Length: 185
Image (cartoon, rainbow, N blue to C red; front, side, top):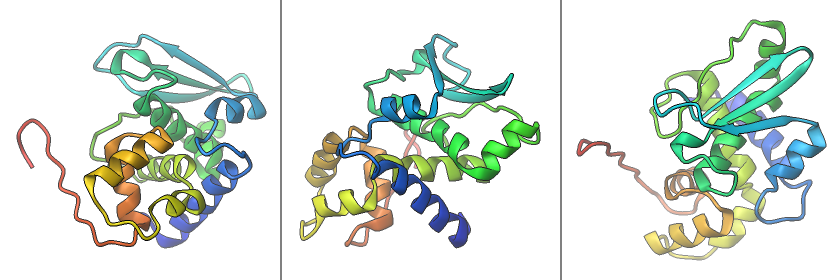
């Protein structure tokens, strides 16, 4: 669980970045350009990582693995990139990477995250892609349903899972999310 103080700070940071842009769908390419960040979409194998952020020779580099479906225009690719941007923007992550206190590590989508740093980057990604100020307007006074989740995921170019978790976090309905994998809950 994220500490409330950190959660609030991360939310404010991610949403302030997203709201600098007029677009409803957070323009990750513009954020990269504005920050002068290099991102590499390439084949890194199926059992490696979704994304990884490195600091080398005074610059940050983000690597995104296309073997796992992380294309620039896919929901998975957008979340992976937003997660890696979390490592860049969250002060403790960025400073840790710059000073060598935090080793570059593989990030995996759709895996239970027990690591605090990974949970923080996931939360940052969620807030960056679905800032509450915009997102909540699209479900205000609407009855919760799977159709609403599907509508919102399409509006924000995120996965059904990411959208459901964001709705559970800020929505106006009590929601229970049950996670299943390989036929097990």
